[in-house]
Structure formats: C-alpha cells, structure tokens
Length: 417
Ligand SMILES: Nc1nc2c(ncn2[C@@H]2O[C@H](COP(=O)(O)OP(=O)(O)OP(=O)(O)O)[C@@H](O)[C@H]2O)c(=O)[nH]1
Ligand SMILES: [Mg+2]
Image 1 (cartoon, rainbow, N blue to C red):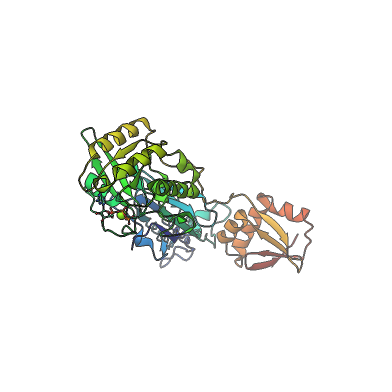
Image 2: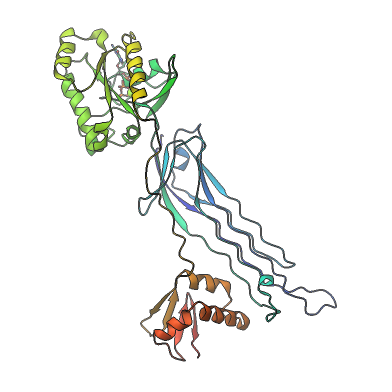
C-alpha cells in the first residue's frame, strides 16, 4: 500500500548518569572522587533518501528512539555517547509537530538533513564536583532525560508538472508516453490509486511530471479517492489538465468540475497556471472540440492523443516554455517549529492544597537531578544553589517559614532558616 502520511513517535536518547565513586586501592584508604560523566544521548536526525518514493516504512506509527548515553563509572570512565537515530524519508517530506501542527522541516533537497531532537546531556560524575572546600563530593548528576514527541510525516511530491483530470481521462497514458514511467492504465475509473512520478527528457533538458489519481465532483469532501492526493499537486509549478473529449458527456462541465474541486481543496491552486490537454482526439467528434474551444478560454488548449501521440511534441514544447517563465521550484516558506528547550534559569513556586511550597521549572528540575536529595553533602550543595539562583529569596517573598514543607518533584523536605 502506498503511504504518504504517517504519524510516528520519536525520542532522543537520555543523557547517561554521572557516577559517584571514590578511588580505592589496597593501602589507599581515602582516594579522591573518580566518578566519570554520563554520555550524551543520541539525536534524532531526518535525512532525505532520494531513491525513496513513499513513507510506507513508517505506516505503523512506530516508536523510534535514539540510543541513550551510557552511565559514567569509577576510575573516571565516561559513559559512551548514544548513537544518533537517522530516519530516511523521501524528498518532499514535510515534518510537523503532531500536537501543534507546526512545521519542523521541509525535506526538500536531495541532501537535506535535519536534527529534530537533541539528545539529553550526560550528568557529571562526582570527580567534577571536587573543590578545595569539598574534597569528597558524595554526589553526581543524573543524565538529562529527553521527551518523546509525536510527529507527522507528510509527503508532498515535488514535480514541475501535475496531471489532473477526471478518472479515465488518460493521465497515466500521457505520463507513460512522455516519460519512462510505467503506470497502470485501464479503461475504468480510479485505475491510479497513488501518485506516479516520471521525468520527461527534451532536447533542452528535462522536467518532472506527477500523475495523480482522478478527481470527481465532491472530491474535496471525500468523494472518490477524495482530496487525499491533492497535496501532491500543491507544489507543482504547472498543471496540465487532461480532458477526455471523446465521450458524449459534457467536456466543458468535466473541466469546470475538476477546477472547482482543485480550488475547494486549496484556493491557491487557482493561481497555478494551467495548460489544457484535450485528449483522445483520435476518436473525438470535431464538433465537440470546436464547442470546447468556444466555451473555454482561460488556458491554452492542445489537442492530443495519448494513443496516436498526436500533438505531444507541441504540448511538451509549450510546457517547457511555460516552465521557463515560472519561478524556480523552492521549499515551503514557514516559521520553523522548534521543540522548546526550556529556559534553563526558569523556576516556579506554587502552593499545594496542603500548604506545601511546590518548586518546579527547568532550573529546579535540573538541580533536582544534579543531586541526591537524601544525601547530606549533596543536599547542602543543592541548598546553596537555591540561594545563589535567588530561589530562596523568592520562597521567602512567597511567605515561607521555618518548618514549612517544600516539595520538589517527588521529594519533600522541611524548610529551615
Ligand atoms: N482512444 C484513446 N484512448 C485513450 C487515450 N488516452 C488514454 N486512453 C484510454 O483511456 C483509458 C484510461 O486511461 P488512463 O491513462 O488509465 O486514464 P487515467 O486518467 O489515468 O485514469 P485514472 O487513473 O482512473 O484516473 C485507457 O483505456 C486508455 O487506453 C487516447 O488518447 N485515445
Ligand atoms: Mg491513472
């Protein structure tokens, strides 16, 4: 099955914990601290794979994790840095934050690479906390944890030309004769169930063509294959609108129906220039062609046949000329969404129902993982950090008195002056 949209869960690696350890050796009773640092967690990186054409491998909404950093150990051994997780996606994949819908990246160019999540920082080992006044720090930092995030991957095909039209109009046939693509062709509607891409080579160069599944009235509301595939038209620079002129149906109405659905899906598509390919002229009534020409004058019309190849050279030349006048293809313009790395100096003070002072925020969380709160030595260090960073002062301002409870994450202690 073709997949052009997938929601997946990604998580960078957690930082490894720093180690608390003291050098020991026979006959050396009180060696210094020698706990090594934890390694940083691996990043989550997205990379374009120019050969991929769908998001099928992501269709099960899996959880993807980069490697955690290793824990530090004694003898100043640092933990290993976690390996990055590299996820490859086809060109044209737009990565969004699932919660806010914000665009994180447009993987547009063949060598695009984007680090979407940074791994947690490794905790420092106790060897790092040694100072002239503290010869034997009995604590080390925990590694920084990283959060799992949900992202939506959406493939928005990048092609110069998009073929649109009613089902059975002959779009895939046209793609197959203009390019080396080999799409399924059959005399019934909805033969094409997913977009096909091909490259049309000319004397001057080449351009890419995307053939998308047929549209019917109500497609924007979900009729037929719905508008699911219209996003593959969003970034084509030129639309070749294929109209079957051989049927007894009203070709002018068919043409208008498709245009209405395009604009209902995305009104910016009204601004994408069109060239009309009046197809199946090999078995059309000249009267119908004349009527179509009389009724439609909002786009240049080429009479062609995908079967006899009539008019194809003229069509290709016109497409090529038109493309030259259009702005070059470019990635989407957007304000990139970035996962917040909380302000490392921020903290919050709240009162719980039972009167306890609850400390939170990035600063507190970081401090809390820095120390082992039930270790005396470590706790003193923690208190000093609260003083230095102004948290103690803020607590006093908030009315704290000796004997009041202070809660940090899941630890509670009593405030003393
Ligand atoms: N006589 C004639 N038949 C054609 C021409 N072009 C396509 N056909 C036939 O029309 C039928 C539909 O062609 P496709 O190329 O599958 O049409 P499509 O627009 O891709 O259809 P969907 O994928 O269902 O939207 C096939 O039987 C083709 O052989 C043409 O120029 N002349
Ligand atoms: Mg088709």
